[in-house]
Image 1: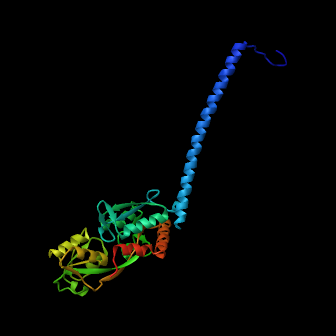
Image 2: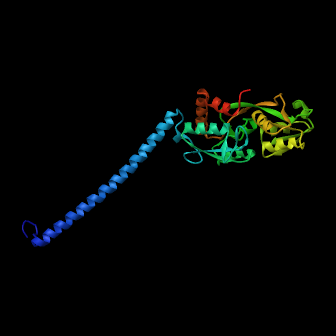
Image 3: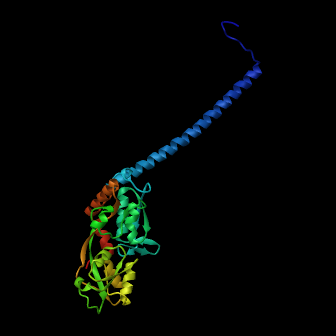
Length: 292
């Protein structure tokens, strides 16, 4: 022992082997560290880039920050509708198309979300929203006071009228002639509500508006109460029927949102405002309803 240091003597051959082993181990460790570090950095860079692009796209649309909007599924806008209401929503092959579906797509683009549509019975649309299974109800829904007790509504995106369909030879000339008659409606619609208030009338409810129209054509009922655009569409398809000129009632169509989801409601309203201002809503409606 000298100055507290123990000297260990190794043969020259052993020392060279140890130095070589240590050097190789060091190179392998450095190589592994370099590979692992490069891959992690690249993944994070890609994630960061994708996030930046997503935010940029959303901002370029001039809409609400999608991160602030509460939806049932992250990144998606779940839309409850009833695809038996042309031209607002209907089946075209395996797709659901129409005014409301185009508006849903335009709103979702503004919000940076992807649309997913659920086709259900009309009288279940609002329930789907209140139960939290869908983000919005978009199905030619009139924002009535009764419905406002269950859901919040967006600003009006279009107006419509309730009209009466009768057979060509019918003596019914207007709403006053509906008393005591057998009336056909689509279950849960505004037409259903109005018909239920007609004195001594019998209301026959159908899951589909077209089923009510077919029943009228077959003489099973005396009249159908339904939305104007839908009425005109159905009469084009079924001969021997006509739409009365007299409007039964005016109505405002709006989008149903679960009560309390202010972020989504505000986002939808902001998107609607922009889509009205730039003419998109008018263009969508004109695409499906030709000016008379």
